[in-house]
Image 1 (tube, one colour):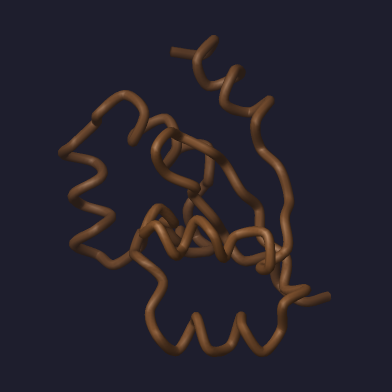
Image 2 (cartoon, rainbow, N blue to C red; image 1 turned 180 degrees about the vertical axis):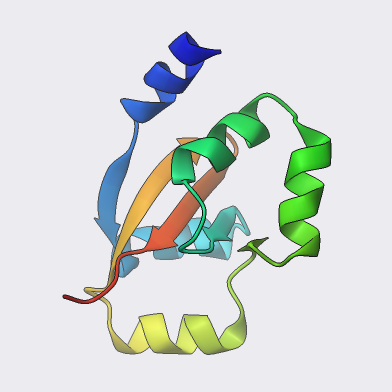
Length: 98
């Protein structure tokens, strides 16, 4: 699995909220809590590690964007996110304001 993880790591990127809006409209964005490693989540989703993904869902560590988040991000279109594409999803994690 290390090679697959390295392959996914090459696809890690940073993007602004504006760029993610089309993906939200097609219900393809998954928000990852700040305590999780984006690559760990990407690997688990890509390899269909259902037990691990279900734990994260149950603990609300990976979610769909909620209305409050969408409102906040729409008010700040330059908000930045770490992103990882794992077809058909775009997995995102907020970058803390510095």
